[in-house]
Amino acid sequence: MQALPVLRALSNEVEPGIFVPKLTQICAELGVAVVFAPTPKGCPVSGATRWLAPDKAMLMLSLRHATNDHLWFAFFHEVGHILLHGKKMLFLEIKNLDDQHEQEADKFASNLLIPPADAKRLPELEKTYDAVKQFASKLEIPPAIVVGRMQREQLLTWGQLNKCKVRYHWH
Picture (tube, rainbow, N blue to C red):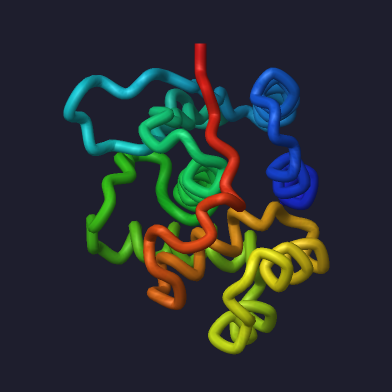
């Protein structure tokens, strides 16, 4: 999909008022309706994907996690479902769901955001703000995505380097 690099580049924009309209417009042109919705209290779902018609998909992000690393990972995870999986299934992205489709979507998002050759360097990356910022800059992604990946892979604790993350305030 030719739009993936453009969508990935949007992850560098910190203002939802700027990236949301661009993201929804690009996706709409590709037949994907993107919906941002508040998370119902107690709901563990971060995103969902469903085909509405043979040429129209819906990708919903629940705004459950208000940081840019979570939002962009969830978005590309759901894009993975659209590109990799059949048009008859409903996908709900829930943390710790462990089936093949979810693992494939996780891998798709992980590899798109930080390509495998670069991800191999993460264990040796110095665990400082400057090192993460420099690494992210070379990949043309926000430092939060690097931090989120390192946290998920237990290369950082969940509290380390969170100052790299942008916290969104949705209205």
